[in-house]
Image (cartoon, rainbow, N blue to C red):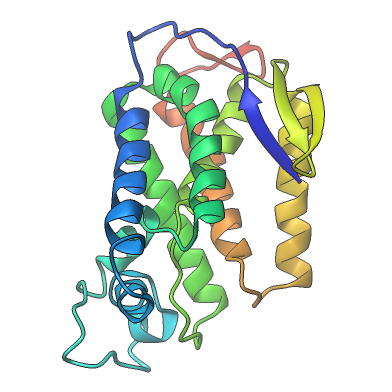
Length: 231
């Protein structure tokens, strides 16, 4: 629906967003390591062993014992760093690259890292709770990045973003319209397609966590919607 390309917001509190760089590098590195080097059956095995499978999480199903797999609790986090395709990876990393640096700047490195994985955890749990019997693995950073997106919207609603609508129409539009439209699309999609191939509920879980945590995690003196935050 909307692909961000550039926002031009300068950093205020740090030299560089090292955590954002690290997360992008880790996701790309894992994708290249697994999805370019391994055969398709091995790729499926990695997704099953390290992705989040709701039925396995809730104990109603089990993976084969000979499959290399993370402890079930760890899949709530390990799934965040894995991606299924170039398009899946590219879309998520582009959103994280454009918006993550300014959210990290507003929070600080460690708090942003914690924020990212809490939003990812919220997305994982929301997906599992809404699809408890599913035996399909959930992978991707979309839940965590959804938290970053709503945080950016709360921090910089009036900033104008360069992006592409429907992947090809150039736009220069305020974050308020672009990201509010993106969020509305996630809500409608979750309602209309609750058990589809896209983890819409993971997106919504990340959005909810991001909205709740942003006022708590940002530095003193950082404003939300143009207004100071009392702490």
